[in-house]
Image (cartoon, rainbow, N blue to C red; front, top):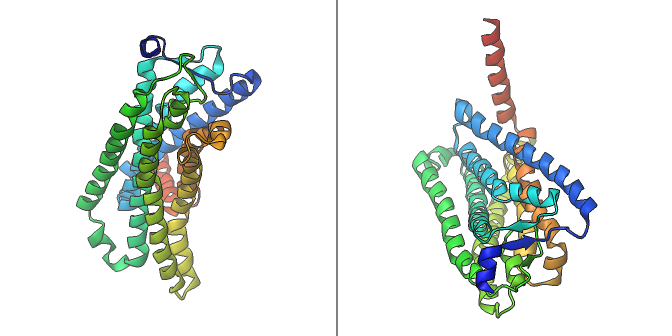
Length: 312
């Protein structure tokens, strides 16, 4: 069975029982993926070329944009191939590579959202010491921690998942090779894997989420202490985008990963998987740009220079 799996790979079912729905999803996923590429690349380029955006907040936002680009690219192209035609297969090594990258980047994003919450905490609660605390060396170390956490998370979970005794039919009831779907495919004892995913979930999901909530508790108290409405509004705008991103990401990921064998995870988890692999990376750049005066100003300065150069 193991040799057959390595030779023949897996079958990603998706919504193969609803071909019409798959065609609709193909168009929707293509649009979302295109917007994801354009939006996140735009943020990375703007943050790099505009001196006004050379701040810790935009440094971490650039990290988030790059992570989202890698996260979606690790699974969406294969997803589009499987949605478009009758061929739903993915090779064993393709599935393994997808799992390692997908899980590592997912763990890294959890830690990155925590780091961004810490940045917002310092900005609101310690504004006079912000530059001294969030100095470039600390930002580089925090970025290293984010990527190292992702590598650690995937090296702990992925190898044991791929060693499971998979059933001979090789049908993965999902769009991507992720841990809960592969655990459901196993025909042997998966208690160790389920315990492992619970521990990883506690460390990379619930742990960072708890710390994010604690940090925002302190932020809320600091905002309420501000007497002027203008000051409160500015502090709220500083944090609102990050809060929305945290809510979207954690609500969908937690529902899938906390109970990997549950009925809810199996039946509705595919829609949640689509949400945090396709929709959330598309919304992140929009959330951070539509209500952000700094990014809008960077756009104006960039296109203003282009117009001046064209006139000259």
